[in-house]
Image 1 (cartoon, rainbow, N blue to C red):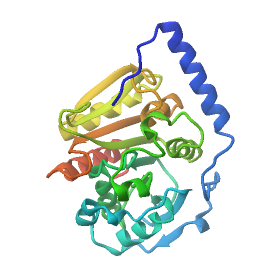
Image 2: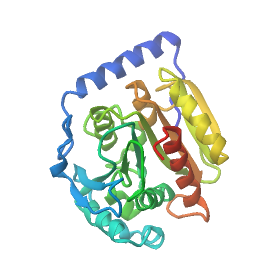
Image 3: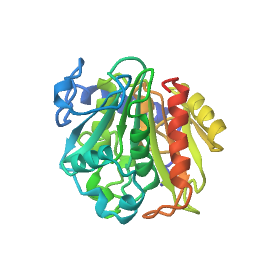
Length: 293
């Protein structure tokens, strides 16, 4: 991760004001395909029959122009769960960025995002593993899972979208991560987790959970909770939007939604043994923090 130049206190305040203004202005014009309304039009989802009535699974495309055949990626095809549900998600991903909703839209709402960087594979596999696990389970709330932010990038194993690092442009209208942020606001998400992998010797180069204390202190509390239960290192910054400008986690915290970034260690473009399980455990810990499972 490339760090921003450290700026003086007055400049920090100015930056935050600009970011907040951008988010507030952008909130009025969601550019998400098949955008959710406040009551969530359930007819726009493609229903998936669940084994129990306690937890239904529904899915739809939220961003067009990003679709790809994710199973063209050898490591994705090799490691994702083999099920009808997985096949349906893979097929939907050809049309664009998919979102899977587990639950009926009520109660605490958690959003799990993977694939901001298409070449970081463990978390994307973990997200599909999580959907398969949750199907039919009794849960206390609603879980939204975006397993591939840009399926075409995942299919090719590439990091950038149109030459841009999507974890630096969440504050820019029209980018896939900005659209996900707007959707999180529209859905009144309680907590957002952005899941990544870090290459050995990279930044941070170890299993970790990023958070900040201001303006959303819960970000730090959530990070400590996940770290304690997964053996991750907590990496906390005092102020969002300074160290990692435009990151999904930082921009989400600035918007008032508690968010964390979870990292596991795996070389980019491949899957290190044990990395999928570790990412999955971080996701489970996030859900347990909200007492959804």
